[in-house]
Each structure stands twice: as C-alpha cells, then as structure tokens.
Length: 347
Ligand code: ADE
Ligand code: ZN
Image (cartoon, rainbow, N blue to C red):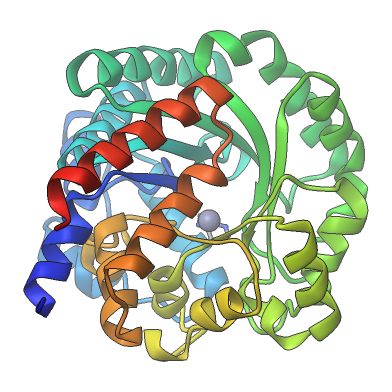
C-alpha cells in the first residue's frame, strides 16, 4: 500500500528530463543578486515584493514583465551564473537532461552581444557537467514578434557556434496571437539544413486555438510542439498528433499562472494522453507562481490533481527522455539510469 507522501518522494527522486524551460526567466532570487551587482534597478527589492509584482493576467502581461526581469543580465558571467543555477536545480531534482531555451531578441538584444551570451552559456554548460553531471543543451528561440530578416540573421549568427555552445534546436516564442510562423519559414529551413531540430510554441492560449498548432505543422514540420494544449479542441488534430507521435512539451502550471486554466484540474494533459498523444511535463518559467515553478512542482501538481500512481509517473518520465533530442547513445544511458533507479526504488 502506498500513500501520497511516498508518491511525492518518488517524483522527487526519479530520473527526469526537462524539455521546455526558459533560461531567461531564471529564479527571482538569482536575478535580484545579479541586479545588485550590475546596478540595475528593478520594480522590486525582495522576493516578497517580487511575488506581489509578478501576478500575471495573460501571456502578454507575462512577456512585458519577463523583459523587465531579463534586463539585469548584462555580462558573460551573468549568463554563466544562470546556467549554473539551472544545473544546481536539475541536480537537486534528479533531472539528467535539460534542454533550455533562450530568446535573444525579446530578452537580451540591445544590452549584450549575442557572442557574449553564447560564451556564458558554453562555459556554464561545461561547469554544470563537471560539477553536477547534468547534461544541459540549448534551444535558440526566435521572438515571433520580430521581422523575418532579423530572425534569418539570428539563425545565421547562431550556426557557426552551435556545436561548441551545445545548441540543438531552434524554437519560436513570445506573444502568440497575431504573429504567424509563415514569414519565418526561411530561418527555420536554414536551421534544419544545418542539422538543428525545430519546435515552436503553439496553441498555448485559448485565443490561439488548435489552428496555431496546424499552422506550425504545415509551415515547418516540427520535431516537437511547445505547449499545444489547445489541440484538445480539434479531433482531426488529435488524430494527427496521435498517429505521428509528435511530442507536446506541456507546461501545466505555467498555463495556470497566465490564467489559461483557472486550476490544474482543468488542464487537458491527461485527456491528451488518453487520446494517444506523446505528452511530457515541463516547467516553462521558473519565475512564475512565486518562483517555485520547477519540474518537480509541475509533476506533483499534476499527480495530485489527477490522482496519478507510480506507473503513470514512470510513463511520463519515460516520455520526457523519448521526446528529447538526445543521441541514441545518450538515450540509452538515460534509460539505463532510469531502469537502475527503478530497480532500487520499486518493490
Ligand atoms: N517565453 C517565455 N515563456 C513563454 C511562454 N509561456 N509563452 C511564450 N513565450 C514565452
Ligand atoms: Zn515556453
């Protein structure tokens, strides 16, 4: 017989993958420390004040506040520290692999050179591997509000350094409604030609709808959809996603934070899984919900809301590794770690 506490401890310990998290919205405590050393004034001076300020009404509201937060990141050391902090959190939550996004145009352009940012990420990634044995890789997201010439230049600038920095893919994010992916097709094609994987945020808010997911599928033939929760409203799309097993990187508590759903019980994650889709649990933005929106928190909230059991959690963590961009060799290593952990931790 198991109880809830056993399941929560199981969630903390089981080896996991995180596939959808934005480096730019690093934990508020770290951003406060960096702001102090860089003499940047923020609209809050403590975590308590941050929590009052960071109550969100929708995605656009989040994006405005997100840009204020990222204004503190100015130097290579700042980016190094952010990656190290992510590595520390991964280690504490037994996240073996983290594929983390950064959105240069929305979050950093105009304050720091792309090359400086990339050097900070590259050094941070090496330090995280050495100190925590966590594999961090990066996804270079296009800010969907910029014009297509800028997105093409961005991908051109990324390509020469992708292997050295550990960039595996290109994504697409920021304010969703009114910013289609079609005009950015050339940037995605260039990325694909250079071996980068493709994904895009789509179908996150109600107003974007399932059409936003179709639009991404039709334009870039993605390797994953980031969010995609609105797919639940379209039977044809559900059948397509189930038969193609195109993974969704769902972020249940982020959706609650920006009020797509008023409570996690309303999230379609389990309904999507029951329709045969390959769903994964992710955190999206650590800063949300009092800066405690990490991966374990998301697993626990989903487990409690839907009364999940051990087998459900094992299935969801396996999905995380299966949907990652890991090489065959790395995937075998992660699955071996998971199996070894299960051998010791299940009866
Ligand atoms: N950038 C950071 N978080 C995001 C989200 N939830 N949706 C779109 N863009 C984002
Ligand atoms: Zn996201």
